[in-house]
Image 1 (cartoon, rainbow, N blue to C red):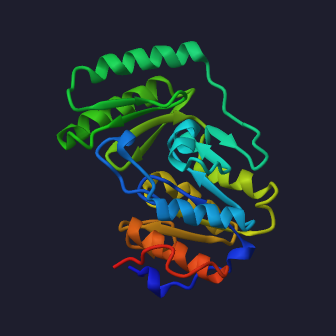
Image 2: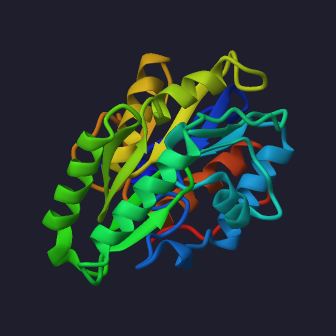
Length: 258
């Protein structure tokens, strides 16, 4: 596995940067609401953005949660794996699903999960996540429930496994597709895409960036379409420091990884 120090920083002024959040910019926590982005990382993203470097976040979280994590910075962003998207002009481009059907799915999922204490259901508005991080013994139950609902509502939902979670996302939502959409728009168009992610949910993004001649960077271990590696969330901070150094930002603004 390549360490961050083995990789030269990309020529930042010619790139467009896309970042996953949980497990990439922020450490994964026992519950989603406990996650936070370290202040030095937020400061680095803000400096890149202020210097005219296109930066977007691509996450399974809803846009509202992304904005809260990044506040006061507001970036172009895609939430719920691309079901929600805000472009660089601030225009929202969301997949539309039937509200009554979503309410029915929510009720049925909540009833099913109530039979398994420790299995946490997260309603993302247009998607649902079954978290079993606090009860790893429920992984198979969570998988079977998610597969059942994905099959039952196959016309609108698809199954997306992740780290200690199974998500039911809108059919057609894909981090790869949303990166392609960004890359067709100003200010991303004509640049080299760089995508940093850590999870199975990021693999479509890695594949899209590879096809576009960009740089795909996986955080952590495991098989991946990504062509480069960073060992940890902490190492992402050191990699961001390289970018700031290339742009002539003050040294030492981000703590280096061990």
